[in-house]
Length: 576
Image 1 (cartoon, rainbow, N blue to C red):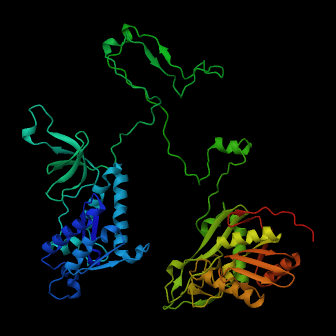
Image 2 (image 1 turned 90 degrees about the vertical axis):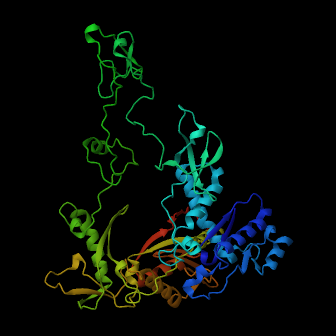
Image 3 (image 1 turned 90 degrees about the horizontal axis):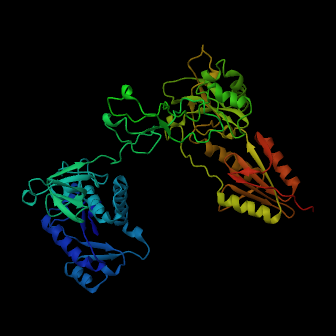
């Protein structure tokens, strides 16, 4: 199918192609069609909003790739005779024809969607593509004026959408009266596969006749799925046949034992619990007057419990308390959603130590100053974030950075992290050269970043004084949640490693630092607040750890075991 993309990416023409060699003939058809239907003013309808001249506008440029179908002598001659400039893209450089290439993707997305939505066979891809072009020409886009479609610009009138139908829907088309007999069906079932290009009708695929049909009188079933609901409570897939009441006595009845009751024979030695049980024939006084009703399960269907909510039933709790459950069975604890909930009598014993630890860290780093509120301040709200980790409960006081205004209380926000490729190269270097590899973690890393703008925040719940409601926090340090917090922290530690410890940042990765001398070499990979430290001397690693502790609050994790999802297995180093 040849797609012709007009100026400003608006109207699309589609012409069916059987072979690439037909490209010239198809282009000739579109050329004549376009100039005929626009009165030799192919572009003026699109460029009217730019106050173009009222003179005649024709196709002036054709841009294609270097396909052989566009480079034939006949194609060149036709373009030359009509004064059309032929522009060719560089080989393997589709971005030079970005409008057409992007339109290919724009059209193929709905084609895939239409196929998967109804499960249509892929042999109808050409019909799906033609339908996508048909719809694309009748909807607006960001490249066009408001409430204007390509059809409106091309034809000069708004499109009628009342006839639009869901591609791939089941439908029934009415058969002509002279082709059916008195007792024949008046309609046939088919599949909707598009719109007729030369008549006002629908293109339908009749599976029984194995051919395309164009019809105007069509009834559609546009439901999402044609599947039939199945009763999931039924315990058997066998077909149940209703028996007339007069024949009940002569037909043996089979039944299965109920799941909700246990008979005397339900013992561990009874291995045939699933075998059918023969029910004795009823006598004349017990004959049913109606047909038997298939038995349904009496089990009550209950929706599954969300996995994050701890079970409360006594059976599960007893199972865990008696150590019957396996070691991999965990019961989650509800995490509080607010400071008030965390400090309630039922949660205070668990969460108050973590809250006090976070608040003491805030005070120790002198994170903010208290100032009076004024009307011109953009005061950010804040919240406590509670997390339950393997090491225990953890609490963070977080500013709601979504309320920040660009240019007022934040600017640049980008902060680099070490590339995973650099980490792999570093690990390979450690293994090859038998280096030591240690890991450290910065405690409350973002609180070390120095604020470069005036940022105001509401006083957290744990610091509020009810008698001073007009007080807000003016931040001195980068608090978690601020948009620029990662950037300020990286600038702080980057200046420390390069300016004071004399490390050199790699030109290929700004978060990989190297320091070497005649006797030793040290490498540091920085991923936000995690540091991988490698070196060939234990005393050098001990020195860098000490320098980091002097400046920041650090947590020494010893030899690196797990970093960025990579598990490391330290080996015994050879004695020097």
